[in-house]
Length: 497
Image (cartoon, rainbow, N blue to C red; front, side, top):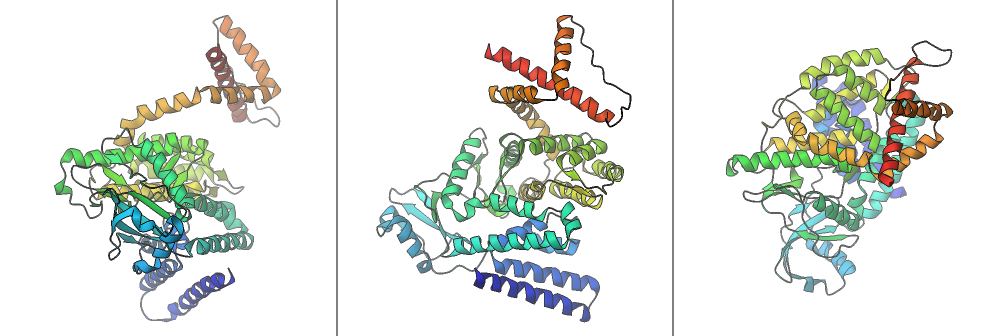
């Protein structure tokens, strides 16, 4: 680990020294800024996959990353010069045994389908003739990833100690934790295979979308999957597709991701154009499931409400929802944030993809919330990256699609799915337990509600006076919660009967 840490510090130290010298050179400040940004991007790219992903996430954080740097970080890609197959052959032999060639009728060892800092992918035909893609991990990369995780965690702790006010608003350790969790499948292809199987089940109801299948039992360092037809959506010719195919692929991709965000709480976290393959007459194939995101239930529901507020042109509602998803600091300016959202939201409502980057709109909220002293959920950075990648991918094929229109088309499915979840036995039992441990006044309120129900006279009364030490809003919220808890308990009891 010491050697890796020394290499990382050397690269970053050289970058810092160059940045200190650059202001003295000729050229405008704007040119110097672009040059610094390009140097940062090249340095992160040379350091490998973790630093590339960190840079990509930073490109969605305009709240503390300057515009020139964001533009350059968006160009980060994990493509490297291919190395000879002889480097990877020992990995195949170790994972599948010395008879590994018997698994394949043919394998193209001359021209890889893809080369990245983590793995190379080769086209092959299995012994029975089935076309396949063989993904092989680079030797030693797992050790490097573990070392980089340790280095970045230590750097995050040092940042937290050196800049406590900054980390009060920007939770760097938590952001890294979200990133590391999402990248589990990058270092262990068995986990990526599990992600693929789950995603394949989730796409079964879509006409224009699918996920490659795992063809051979995966190992930690080798994954054999079905070959996706066509080309990257970035390189596809829209004129080669019918209008129904183009829009069908775009709508299905959006719908699949919406359901991932709001129902499954499990989504492809790196859906850039290179990970979507399309061909006329075939469904789109979503590949590379090494990086997936997971969202907490409360954040998922709040994010859905935030989208509703954008669609309804409700800036105040968006501000309220965003604050509830995050955490206001002691110096937070909530009134100023509401004003910011009331200005931002009308620009986003009902825009199509050729007019709007919704992922950028999502992260633009971060600019205002951070400036106003509101800490946002760490998963928002990953969601912003996912949204931006999704839109950028679909824009290549059908830029005319409206994000809010597609959300409206899937609203019934999402809402009914949430309703089934809330009314499930497990959730109702959990809610009943909350009732049992709630404040003592809740049970008394519950008895009053039942008595009023029996008398067919239910009127909700909320105290309006300001009692010492008791906030009026908090009183209303507690009473509403008591009603909802009791209702869920009654539903659960009836279901048990």
